[in-house]
Image 1 (cartoon, rainbow, N blue to C red):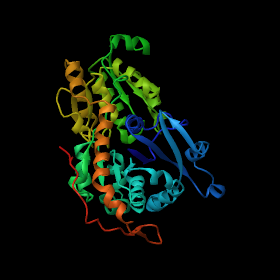
Image 2 (cartoon, rainbow, N blue to C red; image 1 turned 60 degrees about the vertical axis):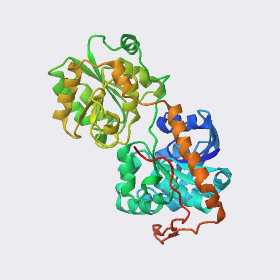
Image 3 (tube, rainbow, N blue to C red; image 1 turned 45 degrees about the vertical axis):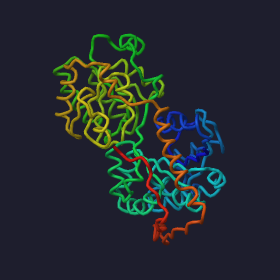
Image 4 (cartoon, helix red, strand yellow; image 1 turned 90 degrees about the vertical axis):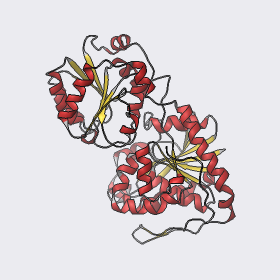
Length: 424
């Protein structure tokens, strides 16, 4: 089966650690399918007049094609306009894909792995080529991006036209239904983990390698250092934790709040190690006693799955897909977001508990190989059920207003069939 993947969340030689969850699943899929990734990178057409945004300038140095983690990647220079780009992102994205239509034409299935604009543009392009299209959503793309009124309006018109939409958690699947995606078209395919990196290992050895004291309790945060990740809630909670427990907080990651976090760390008990390669995160997990993720908003964070796979319990906020992962008391404790008092109490409670590492691991995910196999089942079913009907006639083009917003979408086909898998 030939699969064309359309996405803006994929690593490159210049951003090798970007979107590891997407890269790992697609790389596993590529071991059983003929996969080519069309990876969108930002391209600003008015750069000569206004200057190039920093990330766009850096990624402009990428070649036309690369092989990344065993996957063939073609870079799509995605047209965008800073600050006003979301409203017209779908037609601009599709225009950017026009130079790569041959890749889509060769494919048996088009797979887009981000809701907007990637998924919406891929639905239109696949229909124009008579190809079945599957859109995979991750969490932030639906829970954040699609909650902007105009974007949500466009997505509610286009995402239901996909042959299937893949969600990584049950709450996300429910949110897709509110967008008008029919339940029989929604498939639950959970993310996986790399068992070679995230598995049971010796804590004392990991601490020696990382220079952590053996006798202290170690709390670990892995993620972006920014307000919506709850980093300041965590810092406030940790001050209260230290009055009750001898503990150290290790922060792995960087972000816009790095300077403020370093200032807080000067008060003691906090170690900021910055961004680390994904292959190293498992060692930090092993060295810790507990993972803490106090985000205000999440999809299904892979860092939680990876901690459970290492046998480390989790204290996290009850947002997004986290309750779907930490659904068993053996896996950890959930608290409301933006509540440092509750977070501190939960951390202290977790540090006083005796956790069974094997029981924690039993609550964890499957491997990326198994996750990719489930995704392939969805792609195969779509190809089998829809490809003949799609090839019968080209669907009419959607109409866009002068401002770039969607004015009309194509009607649903009368030949739609139910797909065999739905959320449990």
